[in-house]
Image: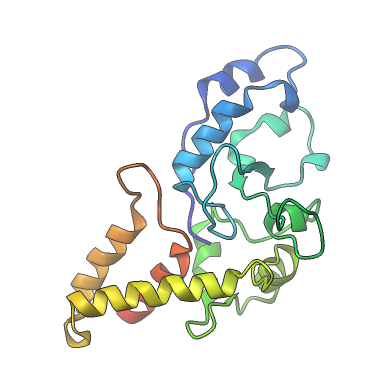
Length: 212
């Protein structure tokens, strides 16, 4: 999970919300999806898998069923997330919003403090938090350590690939603070197509930990 800086809402959503009897299923969701993809680097807000317009859901961080029709149209409460199923089949191995469903959670990728409380195990790729409330959110409610979806394995593979790449370019003794900070800035940015690397959260955590 990485920090998401919410941008401006789509103009179509802003205009639509002012209409009488506006409701979520009546708005231009295509514009919302595009805005979410761009501000999230085309990554699921929770598991950091690649998403696109055809393979994503609009998630209401605070459960939609507890909101009024006007509140459901508030962009700051929306996130782009993956489908969360294996081969399109719903089940106990679901992740992210599909597993969360209507549960209220504490962890919020739009809150920097929350992201600072998230850690990883570099040897296994597991995501965890020493905060028991956040730990329950990420491990149980969102199922972000799903073995069936290979989430820990994919995170570990991404981290190992980056470490190998950096080791080729910079011997361990030359991993200075300033160089690591520059590398963190580089990996935090999207590429020329607006996409961030999948599972980049574990990489940013590892590099920040190296800085100390």
